[in-house]
Length: 153
Ligand code: B12
Image 1 (spheres, helix red, strand yellow):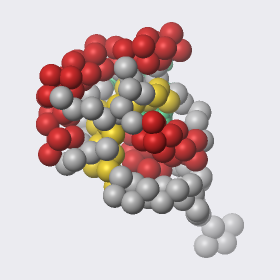
Image 2 (cartoon, protein in one colour):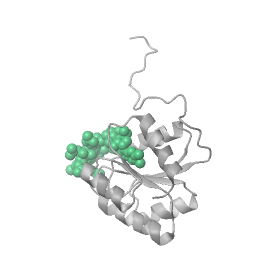
Image 3 (cartoon, helix red, strand yellow):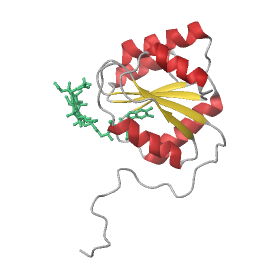
Image 4 (tube, protein in one colour):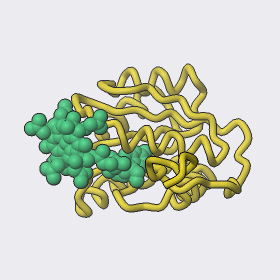
């Protein structure tokens, strides 16, 4: 090994060419509830930045009111939430209810360790997309671009 070789493999493959150049598209990312697993959402934040988005990451331990208030203040175009805690059904239901009561109509998507059946139930609830482990970074960026193009569900 020479001194120039990287010691670690990159967490995700670099995206040299953005799939699109979505100017001024702002995505709010957050963790909700008591879930402390943040590696996935931090990875997704850097994937979306590499793809040309502005990313606002709210960090851990948020609840629906704070997520919705921040999305409004930051004029976000979409909200992405990460769950590895099993709380996805409860928290996403609360988030969608809060968005409805505040009149916020932007796509909301989520990802993480989520059983397939629950992913379908989340979509039926109005979640625009559910991204599970194993997706390529380029697929995450392309799916976010697709749901922004479609607009709120
Ligand atoms: C590392 C780890 C931890 C670390 C977390 C460190 C950290 N800062 O993140 C520590 C040791 C702290 C931890 C603690 C616990 N953990 Co843990 N942990 C894991 C483990 C092994 C890997 C998670 C990880 O980092 N993966 C790597 C990242 C890159 O992948 P990812 O998060 O899945 O993200 C990818 C996709 O899911 C997707 N994605 C994720 N989020 C989002 C969001 C959006 C918007 C999008 C588009 C995509 C997306 O894209 C990402 C990139 O591909 C998993 C097992 C597993 N196989 O997932 C268990 C796991 C998540 N942990 C589990 C458990 C039970 C716990 C504890 C409750 C254990 C305990 N009894 O204390 C605590 C919970 C503490 C808490 N308050 O949350 C369970 C959860 C079970 C469940 N959901 O029903 C798992 C699944 C292990 C298992 N098989 O039982 N854990």
